[in-house]
Amino acid sequence: MVELRDYQVDIKNRAAEILKTHGLCYLAMEVRTGKTFTALSAMDSVGAKRVLFLTKKKAMSSIKADFEQLNPNYNMVIINYESIHKIENKFFDGIILDEAHSLGAYPKPSTRAKSVRSIVGLNSNVKAILMSGTPTPESYSQIFHQVYAFDGNPFKPHKIFYTFAKQYVEIKRKRIGMYEVNDYSDGRESIMMKMEPLMISYTQKEAGFKGEIIERFLTCEMEENTYNIINKLKKDKVVEGWSQTVLADTAVKLMSKVHQLSSGTVKFESGDSAVIDYSKAKFIMDTFKNTKIGIFYKFKEELNALKEIYGEELTEDIDEFDTTNKSIALQIVSGREGISLRHADYLVFYNIDFSATSYWQARDRMTTKDRKKNIVYWIFSDKGIERKIYKAVSEKKNYTLSHFKNDFL
Image 1 (cartoon, rainbow, N blue to C red):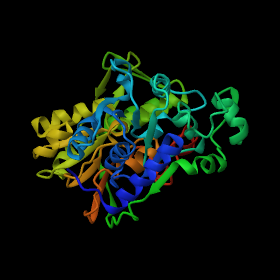
Image 2 (cartoon, rainbow, N blue to C red; image 1 turned 120 degrees about the horizontal axis):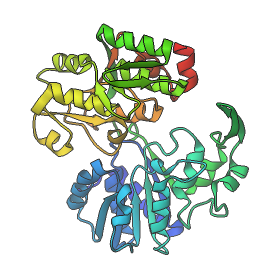
Image 3 (spheres, rainbow, N blue to C red; image 1 turned 180 degrees about the vertical axis):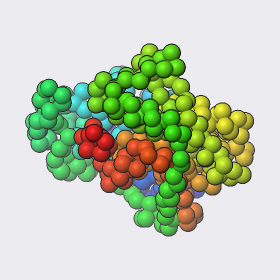
């Protein structure tokens, strides 16, 4: 039986009151502050009997362990969002949505948001807790589809995003290629004001975390042929070889190909992909030999490069990582949320994502209340695109095509 910290008890009690009043509560608690235990306890406090916990696949084992440790007075089904359709008994009186910001696509709802809505629709008077350390990482407009499935949501008069946007968004026009479209990203402050009665925020600083994230930058010299391919692609928009073709006939394709090649992999026009340069994988192995690290990669061939160099010393399983001396490799987007790499000596980024959300979330995976320093290493190729991407995302901006054109074209 786990004992909650004082602040978790306070938040649990406040969440229970919100659930009794509105049926919907949003725990905007930063990573490692104990969102899961708090949410599970709050469901116990309101007398839930059968709870559905939706999360990412990689986080399911840790959620199960937390549930067993807490041992609340209800039954719980833990499943990843993509498997909602596999649930046989779809009737629940409580639902917990982990990393709820992942439902926030707009103007149209994502498949994930629609799936949540379909199961909520079968359960009248269901009580729901949403959890995220970053509820609106890029725009306040991301709130709408996180909550639209629930009766207690403050935007219920608006059945679809477009009518919601007329009241709550500064709608602008932006050009995409030859066309102009509506830009709904400038959500007004009034969105969060309407959400305020449902939200409980809590920071690591409030919880007493004293650790700092220290970022260090290492430069890896890639093979000369890697840059020859990049330069030819910029000039000719096509490279033929390997009995395959690399095509970059649009600026978007060119940006993607330069991103891949800068770290030594490439996806061909056929859909096949390959490692063309193992320099980064070898560099990481040589630099961090005899240390237990968490490695974040972007493209699947980067994982293949790591497997080739590390062999049996590398795992993709969080439980194996926690119980052995192996290092772990995680894809940035799937590994940036819902897992703890507290057993890692360092985090090492093989590559970097275009998303500012990925930057801020993934680099915080080692944080614990008692850990004083979290050292994160970024491995940048000597002539690649990664430093430019880092500059944008570390300033809370996504790296976009306009950035790429200014930097490289």
